[in-house]
Length: 332
Ligand code: G3I
Image 1 (cartoon, helix red, strand yellow):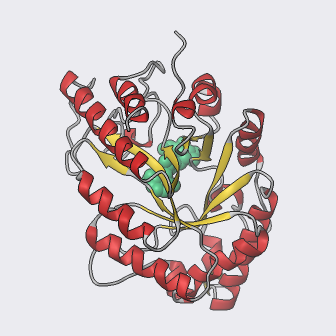
Image 2 (image 1 turned 30 degrees about the horizontal axis):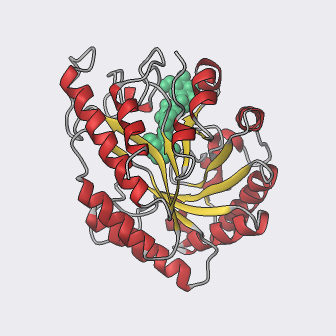
């Protein structure tokens, strides 16, 4: 069956992306090439994967993903340069103790120059800083080694170094729980203060790890309004709609029910209608995967519990959600 292509249906609106890894660029190759016009490496460009030791870079896997994007004429998002997670210990250590402020910033600069420099002609847009906002409580920033050692200066510096390495790249701040009103205001405040300092930042990435039951559509709208008021571009960077509510730890389901598939389709249609309303500021919508045969949600928050968050099923066949997203593409 020759299916309509999402990338064509939304061509006048925004890019349609998928997270890939070195396995799925093989196993999902046809689906990816057919339906999507942008990819993001799920893990392969992260610090611990490309820079495991101070004097050793390992670019083989990231290079394969960059080559895949080139071969298929796809855009490539870079993910991610500075994060509290998937960063090797050596970055924060020196002798028997912790690295000092200047050493850590010099390492960060070296890493960013090398990685951003290498993919200058491939990556058009980087998630420079990922998930530094605290989820709860009065603190603005999450505690991390970066924060402990450098104070908050690492955030602006990361953007400056990335801009220095590739003045043409679009530089994004990326986070999750991004529509939650309290966290939204903290993200807004951080980005507003970066802009006030003259930091080269061009956009906010809303990860979009949502589910069948939330967040409410009005909350997503409010987040778009608030972030867009900063005058920046927005991208949905890691979209998936889990079949399970956030605190649902059930493990007995071996297939999604008809009700779940219908609810997922309704949710997807509703959010894509909203995305189209914001197409002037929203430049890309990337799913965190492509089809239900592989999703990080099979391992989180419960290991080895199957989930079905994508538009295509495990055999790469379209789900009801796919047709409803296409319907939203035609909506005026
Ligand atoms: O590399 C090992 C492998 O050797 C081992 O056999 C395997 C067994 O579990 O684990 C492999 O490492 C896993 C790695 O993904 C590569 O597959 C880690 O355990 C696992 O924790 C890691 O998960 C990734 C996660 O980030 C780490 O925090 C997910 O694949 C990836 O989808 C996820 O992506 C993040 C975004 O970068 C940022 N936003 C949230 C999003 C979802 O958590």
